[in-house]
Amino acid sequence: RKEVEQDPGPFNVPEGATVAFNCTYSNSASQSFFWYRQDCRKEPKLLMSVYSSGNEDGRFTAQLNRASQYISLLIRDSKLSDSATYLCVVNLPQAAGNKLTFGGGTRVLVKP
Amino acid sequence: DTEVTQTPKHLVMGMTNKKSLKCEQHMGHRAMYWYKQKAKKPPELMFVYSYEKLSINESVPSRFSPECPNSSLLNLHLHALQPEDSALYLCASSHDSGSSSYNEQFFGPGTRLTVL
Image 1 (cartoon, chains in turn purple, blue):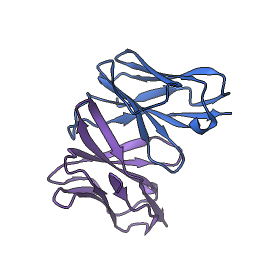
Image 2 (spheres, chains in turn green, brown; image 1 turned 180 degrees about the horizontal axis):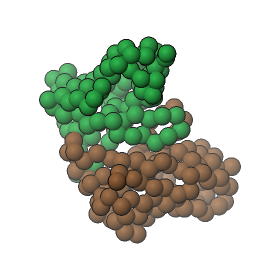
Image 3 (cartoon, chains in turn orange, blue; image 1 turned 135 degrees about the horizontal axis):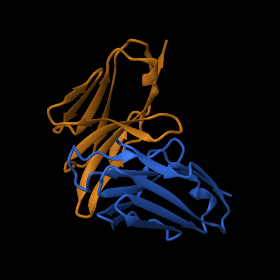
């Protein structure tokens, strides 16, 4: 089983619609969680950290469910510019330092 | 300013060449990272430096040699690479090497490496 798993998609989303997708992680000791977005041939850019109580940043809402070991990302009022690959990232603390484990990414295509 | 810079943007090298990738950040971060990313795959961690000391080496072949001259700079020295080493090499930095949700990693634009 992969440490961090995501539905690769693509999720084809009409402009203005809402889309949501999850990510599951296998290690219950994971401490911190992030969503990054990555555009084609570009670097990953931090979208948001995911806090235990859930958090919202504009049209984006992230949730953490520790009991079921998943995090989710919801995008409201989708824009064409939201088309990207969304990477779920989990931090498993190690004695040696901060090691992020990436999911395979969920591709989102927003269409007019 | 959450900027991490990397040079060069593109690099083509032969299997007998020696080259170096450079990364710089001026955010006062004390942890820096090298990742390798192949097409349609997520980034894979190669090395972690914490307070200028190598803290994690993910069993990377010795033809990749990292160096951290100071807290703002990170280099990756390349020697005798193979064609399968062609990839996007990403540098990242974070405040420190802790695992807090507030200790996000910020990525540079990457160096796209082609080994002939």
